[in-house]
Image: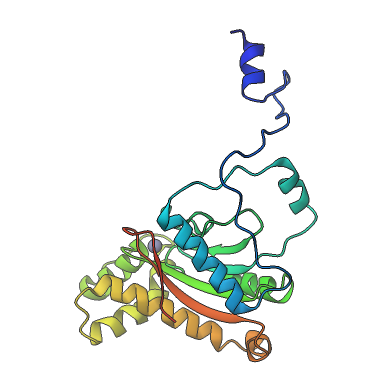
Length: 231
Ligand SMILES: [Zn+2]
């Protein structure tokens, strides 16, 4: 087979541009809740997606060209995920979501600084997101570094300290509670603290009080693929 033959096999035109994509052949994408979903509907939809991820691991179908083109007109994500940068915790995958479904804020250790806060407020106030989920995960390296700082007074190079320091209060609380598994207890405590801080945020207060927004916390188990609700 010559180069031209190979190109048509993989859907590339001679000049290298992608031609029409084939229709997805796998299961259909999950239907989103109709209209403007409530926070509870958005949460149910996320957890249903995680159950789908856990139960079959079946990959979502490729995005059809018209799906991509239609998203160019605008976005209405169903949830903000405040997650960790860890490569094993991509929210779109573990919640079985598509492009346009999630507004994702990710930094190592899933902390919220002022830029992250602004991103969350944008998603809530301008995109109408009804749900914010703070998502920690088992064996988090950033939380592990904060544990090392507390236990061994470890020092960190460069900007790493700015990742570690916001997590220290959660480690101290878990340590004071006599946690058996200090690392994962601190992960959970940090999620709860970040979620509590968002729930107390003045700029979100009116939307929270009106019932148009809910802030929750979750813990992703690297072994089972399951997301457990924390707060
Ligand atoms: Zn992590």
